[in-house]
Image (cartoon, rainbow, N blue to C red):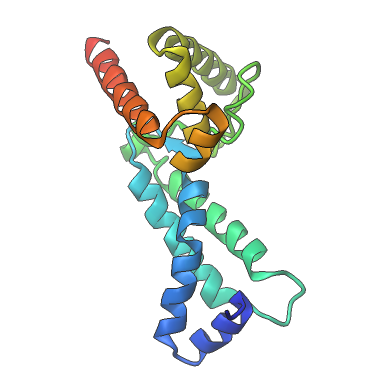
Length: 192
């Protein structure tokens, strides 16, 4: 099996097969990173698409003469592309999409696990913190313990298989829990 760096050299020489191979290797990483971000009113698929653009830029911009491994460079490019897309969505005309929050540290719910990707004032940060605390409490009240545990793991980017192993439940149970969570959230939002 060829290294990432070897594949990049082939790509730079026009090898489409090598490019497909590298995209395939990093698709799961892009999905995992994308799950760490949230745009109110947005869609995970949009973030994944932006992450794939970041991966493409990493492939095109990587230089094997530097001392950084491609994977490290790719992670930086993917995150930067997603954050840039969220900032772009933070224009006045897209105001409902401006509350970008990273749930990367959602496991520890005793503090505010958010990284605002927009320039905000201290007052806006306080309001966002209060809104997050309200959201966290609503989720705890709305979801069962099992559903809340599944949601935390899912938002951290774990696969169904990893969540099943961590929580000691079947992958089908995880799928069912996520379906119930979505239905409960949809119903709660429609009431509000």
